[in-house]
Image (cartoon, rainbow, N blue to C red; front, side, top):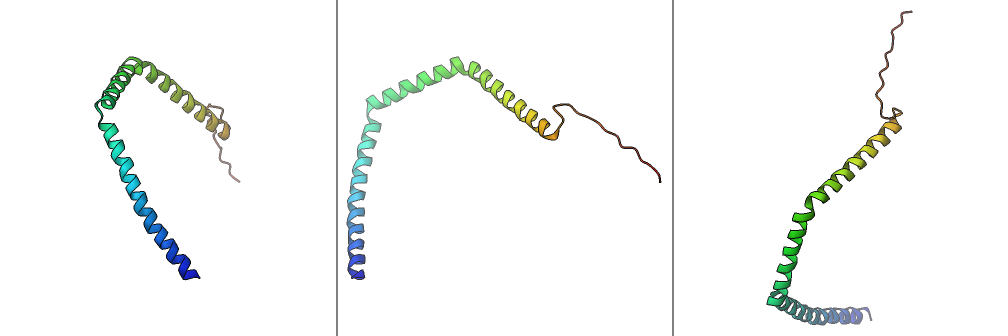
Amino acid sequence: MKAAFLVGGAVGYVLGTRAGRQQFDKIRSKAQELWEDPRVQDGISDVEHRASDLVREKGPEIKEKVTGAVKSASDQVRGSKDQDNGTNGTTSSTTTGSSTI
């Protein structure tokens, strides 16, 4: 009983992978044809140019916003660490005296 189940499973697997491989090859071939279509390539080129223009135009503004956000986040982290250490952002110096007995 187990042997028949295993043989059936093996045959199903082999047939399934062959059919699956053929279907995969078909899909891959169609995708390659679509990718190489001049209309698709023109569309991709258009999107690349628009993206490049947008980055050139908005890049400095985005850079400023990101820089501000990073600075704000790092200030918050520093403030949190200072509170954990009990310093509240200030540095304190303590001196200990020595005593003789």
